[in-house]
Image (cartoon, rainbow, N blue to C red; front, side):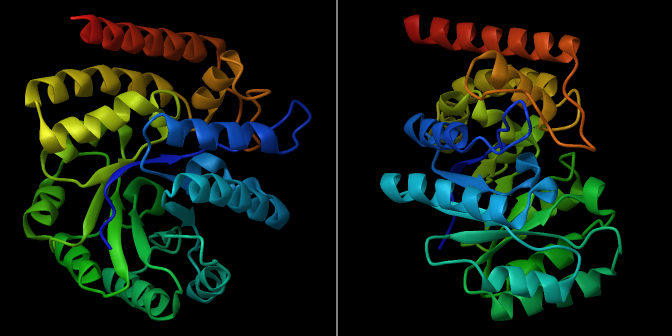
Length: 301
């Protein structure tokens, strides 16, 4: 199995009094798939998973699985922590409706790269679904070298990586040059999605795509099939949008814009996150409007 295309990591909408807004979540899931997403990601960082109860997490999976089943679309579910034993238990509970599990590099404890390999090998050996490694050093405190990434790619039950290193660095170049053909590299930093796609990434897991699904789907397609001039121009527009949406801790600004558009009942996030500021929300809405206007103009031309 090779993952390719646009995967939208969904926010978890809350009502004004803090309850999970199930109908709004379903609306986001169906809209993303109808607007061109290849699949969905449930319980990622964007979903504020750490603040959800066990029952809420299960409800999120059920809602997303139903939407993906009806669209015959893949579903990736976030599962795993910095504890190997707990991660194995979490993976064991994933059902047949799930395509792959997004499993983060162990955070906070900062194991050696050899420890990271041992962790993922243990998970891969026991997981009922394939794994996508979530490589995000600025959150985990653990940078992985190209050799380690290649060793992870060689594991039979590890099918890809969400690559979110905050740059197009030497390790990224080496990974793209030497990765196995059937190992998916998915752009995980919205701001760097276009250059990673240009290097050959098979797709992306991009939170900004919740607000511009069709445009991000077109970006993935354009870098794969051309025309390249269109891919570059679209990438520039979407980078500006992503910068505005990530001006404050994710997903605060995304939820504020969704609420302003009436797509979710409130912009509420759970502590320790705080709601987006009025300035960040206004700037993001302006960036989205500009992006939409430019896309519309392109169609007219």
